[in-house]
Length: 222
Figure 1 (cartoon, rainbow, N blue to C red):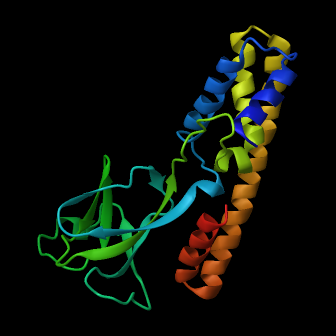
Figure 2 (cartoon, helix red, strand yellow):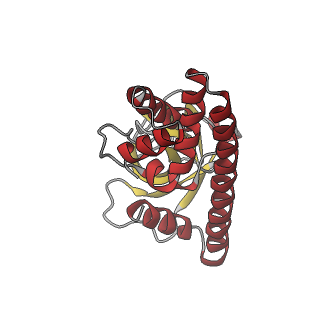
């Protein structure tokens, strides 16, 4: 659904009011920002991206929310032309390699603010695959769509409607939107659990690289 379609639907549920259009637009956008700050995150925010890491601290991608799993994959040395047939897992957390002063192939990583640090300090530049939940570009124009409005428009509408109804003191509508919001959250959570379980089964059956293949495919087909 487009932003304008969601606004029209929401306004209709509030008695066809036409004096709160801007409030509805604002609350739909705010609903997305709020949901992107509140775990658990839906499946369609999961993403994989290749990043080059040399030495020191590397900034995270701008749309980063949090890691998908507590590991990343080293794919190759950056100056190599062919990706390794078997990627190397690098685990997060405070482990013994973090205090190892000798440079070498990274075995651990740590998220520090808006940066990522690999340990031990890389001996050369590496290209790695980061699996993370990402922020989605907000809905701007009335005709705009994004993954939230396509995959979870019921959640955006009910989340925004609940706030709008409270703002205009429509207690009955707020109660109904609250019920819709709870149901939409359950639906998204159930679908996310189902999809992630299918992905994990694929990884077990086909090896670690299946995670990358499925996430990359989904990123290009949403």
